[in-house]
Image 1 (cartoon, rainbow, N blue to C red):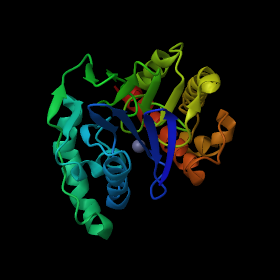
Image 2: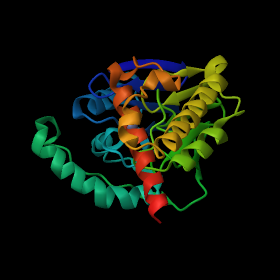
Image 3: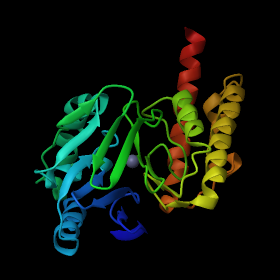
Length: 279
Ligand SMILES: [Zn+2]
């Protein structure tokens, strides 16, 4: 696991075990807040150890940005913390999350000891603020990657944990294309010092607007290709010729996984258009 410091009292942890998923730590005089918890016990426990032994404090709040396993499985290693999420995230964890964990346990021995820990403080639509010590965290709905997703903005530092709204390639297979476009547009002009992606490298101040523009451009590009594909005799065969680079994105990030995410995006959008045609 990699650890970076993005402000005096804000850290980012990046997994070396699963898809460069990130977690954030905000340290205050009244305790720490952990934003997402990674997947594997080994890394979640290492975060806990860092907080308690190196920083000599405790995690008071854990925020689950959305219900996906790679952002939530480590939550059980912070049993004393208040766990915060959107109401929808709570619902999804209780249903899909529980089923997914049982299934994953059958394949992955490293997760045997992981029980699902559900949020203990949930909010309905509209977001929420957490004030702890000197810090104010603004939790805002940001659907698209998944319906339940929230971002977390640290007001005093202008650092935003964007979760999977911002990734090396936008990914909406478990959410909605239009929502993701809107959520990315909402991040524009925010004047952020850093945008912490849900996966991959931290985006620095001077790169933020360009990154958001590139992501929106990518989404426009795949939409054009899908709109073209539905008029072809074999739409999927046409889409198979459209690789990620044709839509302006590198195929290198996340150890090349991004091409698979791109293919899944095309398929999901094609299904959506075909379902609309039939309706
Ligand atoms: Zn993720």
